[in-house]
Length: 635
Ligand code: COA
Ligand code: AMP
Image (cartoon, rainbow, N blue to C red; front, side, top):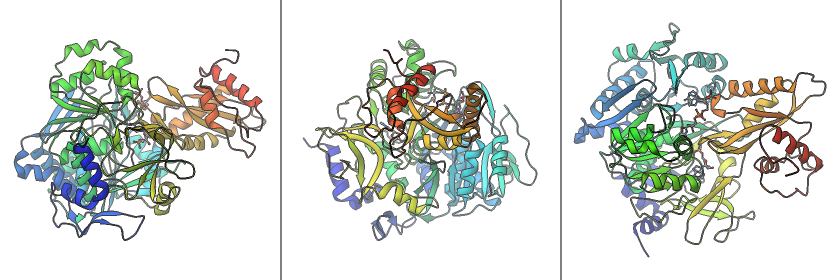
């Protein structure tokens, strides 16, 4: 049977230029493109070459000019500070233009980079949009990363200016950001010319004269700056994400293709009309925050919610229902872990009864696999469709989704439904042949990727090719394994690399291993992701000590745990580590992380044929039992 999804999907692959040119008409172009899809430099495909645009104009000014000036653009809801603030599109235009003026006054111009290191306050969006207004390239760094991670990003992006805040607030804890910022700049070899700091009353920061500027004062002294036309192919932002080493990958997004694709998804995927209230409960530091707290809802003329709080504890497990009800949210997007947290505290959803959720239409989940139990709990209690969709920092929007604005397919729990229009998704086996329906293989996408996806890695074009395009020629490797069933439903099972997913946050076990290995007492180490009821996965470390180390094991563990927190940040949630005599390896010396993970999660495993000494697995099992994982050996 043919439906709007089938028609859109077929056309998007057969006639991608026609498909996306039509979507592009919804936006403002100073000059339309010469070519919709430029494939003159394969495998580097570019969208809308020759086009001239401004993303900020399309996300803000256009709406004011078209009569949405009085509509709320952003509702800032912050239970941690007891504040709610509404910013209309007209006010947002003024705020962004003035902040763009403040950046320009510090020398920021088209092509310059600006790092944004901020908590969930609307000024983060204002800073991002101000960069877009100037044609500058923003790079938002998540607040839960440590100074060292920020320094790595400063060195790679070489920002002219860093925009930050004096502190973030995590439930009841005030986290001063300024010392982290100062330390990061100290560690970095690149030094920004200036920092603009939003002072928050919970922890006012000391500013360094000549380098640091107070946000309010900088804005008060600035002249509003107009939108600067940029090439559709110019970079809009860099977003660093975990790679397999400690050096993060700088995913780069363009202006033209990005705005076209994201605007299109608001109707096609989320079924949201301009004017409605849309809420992505995430953080601007993640891709979900970039795409669905800031850009897509604003490009579509929606009201977006900036929520500075948690699903639980601010103040209780009814927080999400309170926000939905108070602001008449039509659609919520969050990570399954948030719902697991709510379910754990309020299993019978008693708090839901206090709120009127009549405006609420759908819940979208992504960031990690949605377990059927969580989907069923949400659906039973909320009585709205619960839609799993699958995407990555690299892709910027969903590879697979139940496209609610095209055709609502029946939900199969555990599946993000079908490949979204634009995505030539396939499952390939080890010899790169298509797998039959139901057989697990590597999930890959035939090039070109649709607009809105990344087109390179910042300063690392060869790494872009090597990491994503080389293994399966002509395809993008998602590094996820899964299968497609006989009805075309996609199932995403696991990563094929050492990335783990902790509370919807993407982390590299390789990066954690680099930190453990740097400890002077550690000879060898491994980090694996173990199953966790709340966060999906948690990292767990194994260290072998150097000969002659006499320090108590507890002390070494305390030190390596502190080291990961100091180097990567609290977001790594690295709290469990165990000292072992040896690590299980293949005869060629490869650590058997997969087998260790299966033992930890009490799953059956096959004794690897290439293991050099099977007895080590018993020792590993005993150590895991000691830290609360695996089954005791006699069970
Ligand atoms: N700034 C500073 N520190 C931060 C931070 C930030 N922006 N975000 C998190 N942290 C810290 C936390 O305070 C915590 O520190 P702790 O070890 O001192 O307790 C640590 O990083 C781990 O944070 P988190 O993984 O978020 O755990 P949590 O126990 O605080 O909360 C959840 C767990 C499930 C409630 C929370 O992760 C959540 O709401 N996640 C779902 C939504 C989401 O953001 N998904 C992301 C992609 S869609
Ligand atoms: P990130 O880049 O942080 O968005 O993380 C992307 C990774 O999260 C993907 O490669 C998947 O491994 C996982 N992921 C995201 N969404 C889903 C989903 N809906 N189902 C299964 N895994 C998902």
